[in-house]
Length: 116
Length: 115
Image (tube, rainbow over all chains, first blue to last red; front, side, top):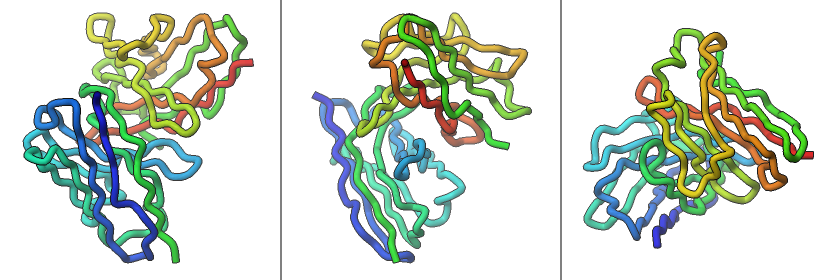
């Protein structure tokens, strides 16, 4: 059974940092590029970042470029998102997913709330 | 101007067909674009429905009924998700997506009401 388990979300003040993790199982994680997609309350999904199957290339949405860093540890089948300089507008549920032409796997997400 | 524009809402009757549009920004050619469609119901992540570029380059999501299909309207520079034989369980939010300038881009979504 395929599982994507996101963790690391929580409450943080503006300017703070969080590191999200996504533990994958049930499929060959190393074969697929992976994405972070977020969804603010009551809004549509917003793509955040993508990383290639072997760890490169990486691309970011303009809204997070320079603040977020995506990484992938294929030996641990885990995807990461280091989020720095957090802003109120980063408040959302964060999902990891292959997206695009990869298999349609989604976790239940992890909630990040940036409050002052 | 947004990269992808979707009408915010659409209503249709059970058993009827619904055509959901996704208009690409001027300068982005729908003819060369693969358009992905997702369905999202409250409390769940988006679910892949299908991908459509042409009749020879398309993919249906696993378990997605054939009454969901994709097409394009080149004159409108738009992708289309056609849902035939509407059922109450089709009531959901629908999002289109493309890969553009090294980024995945979602449309703003269409809320489909079946009544």
